[in-house]
Amino acid sequence: MRVLIAAALSLVLFGAWSSAAQWSGPASIGAFGFPSGLSRIEFQSLLQHFVSAQYLKSFRNLGVEDDFDHGHLLFDVRSPQRPIAILYHTQELGGDDSMDPRARNWIQWVDRGTIEDASRYERKVYPHSVSWDWFLQRELAALRQRHTILDKMLDPALLGVEVSESRQWVFTRVGCGVDSTPPDFIRVVLPAGPPVCLALSQS
Image (cartoon, rainbow, N blue to C red; front, side, top):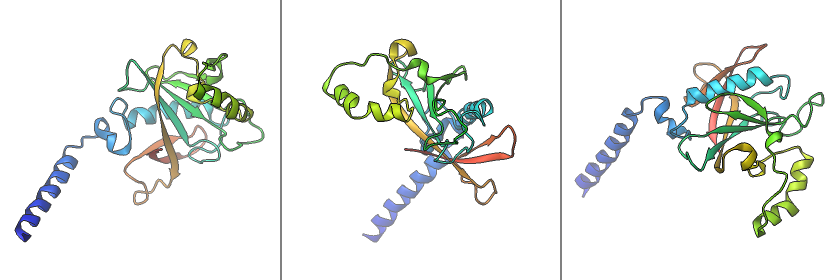
C-alpha cells in the first residue's frame, strides 16, 4: 500500500514539475490570471502608456486602492481570446480634491494603445428587461453620482463591439527590492519619479 501511495505521489510531483518546466514566460502567464491573448509585458506597456499620459491629470497614487489600482479587460464576443480594450477607473474612492471627478473613466484600446474618455461611449438608452430595469432603478443613479461608468454602461453601437466579458486586474503597489518583489509583477515608471513595482492579481 505504501509503495502504491509513494508511486502516486511521485506521479503528482512529476506532473507538477513537468508543468512548471514548460512555463516559458508571458505566453503562459495564465497562472497569474492573464488571458492567453495578452502577455504580462504587453499589459505593462499599455499601463505605462496610460500612466505617462494621465499621471497628475486623472490620478496621483498608482497602485493604491483609493486612487488607481485596477483595470477591466473587455472582450469582444467575436474574439474571446484577446481583450480588445481596458476600462480604467481612476479616483476610485474620492481621489484628490484638485482633480476633476468626471475624469475617472478611461478606455484604452489594446491593439492601438490609444486612450479615450469612456464617457463618450456611455449608453443614452438602455434595454428593457427585468435585470436591466433593476439596474436602472437600483444602481444607475448611485454610479452616476460617483461618475462611474461600468462595462455594461458602454453602448455597443458607439463602441463598435459587443462586450461579452469583463475581467478585472488589480495592480497593487509593492516594494521594488529583489527579495520583496513577487514574480507576478510589472514595473511602471512615473513621469516625475522612480519606478513603481506592482503586484498583479485577478478579482
